[in-house]
Length: 242
Image (cartoon, rainbow, N blue to C red; front, side, top):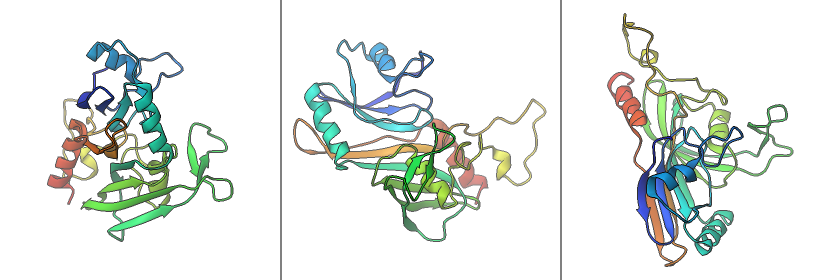
């Protein structure tokens, strides 16, 4: 059983978690354990939790689940109407020329690799991502992205489209892992074995969600702290990557 997520908020209607990277949101084809099963084991929840949105398996961060049908309907309506503000932190390769921008290009399934997405101006669906520079390094940048639409792999494809792919994203312009030797001058190879990567999953974290609580009608915001691997990578970049 994968490690359970941290609980960020819970009441009779909602459960908000910080999903660890590597946990499936929905069950995969190979019958792997998915999020609801992990939560059921962790919290001993008898009733079924209801998903209203997803995060890619390698992405960490804030995810909200409904505990009731009414909450599920209310939240799903807000996501469908784009009334939910979704913010992500993305560590990318390269440094932007401006402090902020809007990526507005249509996306569609890749014509030959159906599990991937691509920019397709003629038949793609409208897709918009706002971004701002949070922290600059010599060869990398930390960006905050706001999704204005919710297409599959949207941030990953959009950032790669403008020449700023995620630092780790083997499908969309990044690498399989990020190692200290990439940016530390005079890095010495260890005799104890091959170098271990600082991070070897998507350098993308769902930082914050803001929506209307489906039961109270009040504004609701939840923020997920960065996981250990992401924090450690940023600390090394601040030390050696400027």
